Image (cartoon, rainbow, N blue to C red; front, side, top):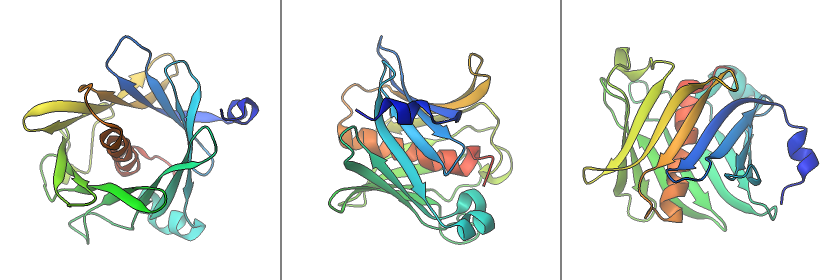
Length: 215
């Protein structure tokens, strides 16, 4: 278990909820204001993972939420479970599409989330790390404004494959906490650990692309 005192002393200011659509309470992935640290919680509120961004102050100042970074995800035994790699990318109209890679120790890539070059509806593909073939398509709302850059404050992304909805990511107002939260729901109970990890990585990429308000 993560040290309770360390978790209790963190100051939380935004939240992503990761939930399976069952009767249990949702898991929560909660960010804090300093250094973009996150805590992943179980349905009972226990800390499962802690995640910390590593990026340079120069990149944060110049590039803001488009900055490159590594996000190290640590499990309850203080072992590294996953690493998210994001390169500098300003979007497909400026240079390369925005993307995020999901790695697991000792250096194996699970897959990547890649922005699709569309100008009407935000679209991403989750690709397998070994074959580079698409596993899921992530489709955003049609009311996204000019060139998919301006999303409404309450936003919904569908994650599907073969015409079937497998998961979803939405952004909504949480009245109890007086803040917006990003929520992940796994619609398909047969999703394996690899697929769930890639969807979690997708939530991080969307968080930085659309929902970051501070550099």
